[in-house]
Image 1: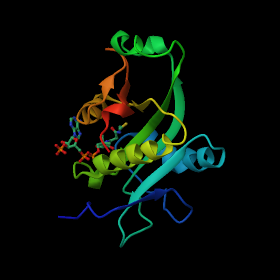
Image 2: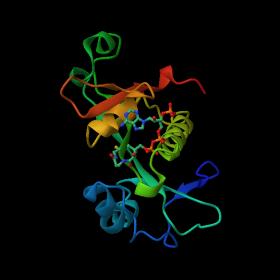
Image 3: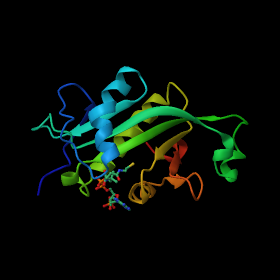
Length: 168
Ligand SMILES: CC(C)(COP(=O)(O)OP(=O)(O)OC[C@H]1O[C@@H](n2cnc3c(N)ncnc32)[C@H](O)[C@@H]1OP(=O)(O)O)[C@@H](O)C(=O)NCCC(=O)NCCS
């Protein structure tokens, strides 16, 4: 079995081959091929990719990170009531995708953990209340719930995980 544990996770760069990536969700494949580079250049998103050390061009998975603010009325009442009455800062994993061949082998978990680690580091300098994930489908919701993310509301594809609940 191929080993997907010892991966390199780094910002997307020109040497990465973006053209052959396939994860089963066309929009996520297209993003890497057509949009990611431009978003990075314009500072709209940061894009992190996972590769194998012995095959550094082939993208095994990627995720995007950016910031957003969450209106208090989007958060569950129980949490909102303890916060100041203005929007709270958040870090958004807008996209997370693992190539078909590598799915179900811990790569998504590694990329998610890496994104959380990066966010925690940034949050020492710029306050971030919560991590947010935009889940593209039920599969993604199930995956995120494994790590303690909960939906903002019952019908929302957006999940959150307050940073204070993450133990470094
Ligand atoms: C969803 C996706 C990102 C998960 O990544 P992955 O590498 O396949 O998942 P992992 O192997 O890291 O799984 C980590 C854990 O989550 C669990 N898990 C994975 N998918 C799950 C799901 N749909 N529901 C519940 N749990 C799930 C695994 O069982 C594993 O648990 P364990 O650590 O107890 O064994 C990946 O399958 C993918 O890219 N799918 C297609 C695109 C997609 O749906 N992207 C949406 C993400 S926003």
